[in-house]
Amino acid sequence: MIPPVQYARNGPVHIAYQIVGEDPIDILMIPGWTSHLTVEWEEPTFVRFMERLTSFARCVRFDKRGTGLSDRPSGVATLEERMEDARVVMDAAGLERGAVFGWSEGGPMAILFAAAYPQRTTALVLYGTRPCFVRAPDYPWGIAPEDMESAIAELERVWGRIPMVHLAPPGNERYRSWLLRYQQASASPAAAVALQRANWQIDVRDILSTIHVPTLVLSRRDDPVGPGPAGRHLAENIPGARFVELRGGDHTMWLGDMEALVGEIEEFLTGTRHDGVSDRVLATILIADVERSTEHLVRLGDATWRDLLHHTQQIARRYVETFQGRDPQLVGDQLLAVFTGPVRAIRCAQAIQRDAGSLGLRLRAGIHAGEIERTEVTLSGISVHIAARIAALAQGGEILVSQTVRDIVAGSGLSFTDRGVHTLRGVPEPRRIFGVIQPP
Image 1 (cartoon, helix red, strand yellow):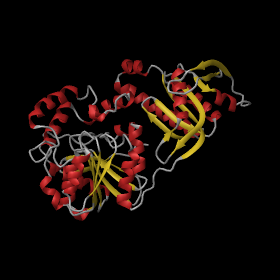
Image 2 (spheres, helix red, strand yellow):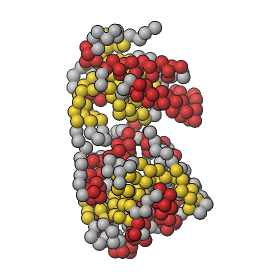
Image 3 (spheres, helix red, strand yellow):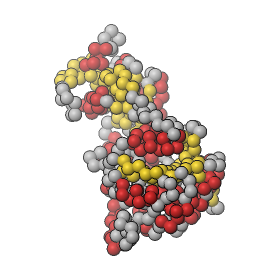
Image 4 (cartoon, rainbow, N blue to C red):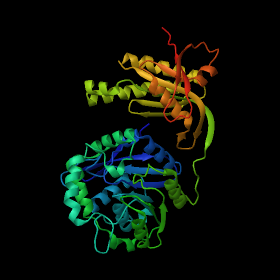
């Protein structure tokens, strides 16, 4: 469930914020360039990141003014105004003191906050960031001044139309599609351009020596925004700061080796690290989605389709709970859920299909039983991929299952039809697939 959005007021401007988690350590999260408090929860990798972070901390996160769900006043806010917005959010959330966590363009704001309010800052965590974003004779990282105007023109051209290259992992079309929606919701093209120009004016290098709270600087070695050498330089200029360089080149926190990043934060703030404990278990995986969802979107329009999807997700969540499923992941028109037995998974899929059919939607479903690996924050294993490949073979209103499922449910009263042997993409050997014969 998406945490409720609340509002803190700084003069006439309302700042949207969320409180996530209940653990005793408090973290004020300062976002990067743009953000959107609710759309982010549509992305499973972000959800897993937040679940891992809140396994040891209570997080207060907000949309900066001009972005996401916060007010969008005319003009671009100064860094000082944004910092005051962060303080107001802390007050509204009841955080007297807490760790301040800034990433990407949120880093300079976190630096300024820690320097201005040391009495309210227990620690400072910086990731993938720099104290300034424009190259200078004494600072070799960032955009060259002569390239700024062409970069602005390109940004205005692609914003809301093409996902930003440095934020979108290659080959992952599902993530790229979500990222495009996320960027459209978080800021308009004009707002994105104005924010970029404002960010390029930031330079807090002179403030670094005034920070006197415990500080952790994290960088992924090949991060295009805050690469390892830039992070090391940043840490060297903050008194007593600890620097950790991580492998990889993903700029976004919840992509790449997320566990390594969050593990460093946990150890820094708590003194201990509890890596996600792996638990390999036998389970039944149900994956379902809406047939011809793009056609529905075009026919109904964004708003109506969004409402219909929300209703469908509520139906799915209710039946997963009814049939004692767990780990439901609902992203757009897709459902993934885990069950202790395949009969429950099949009955759940039938119930969801029946109620979705009353809304004019046809769901296709795939079910497989096998070993999965569950940690505190992730669900993985070849069995998950097999279930997804089986679901992709189904038509609307169909439930396809693996032979493993058909064999396990023998004697349950369920009937099946043999759909032949199929080679599933990315799966080592062919699999025999069966269709569930639906009741009249």
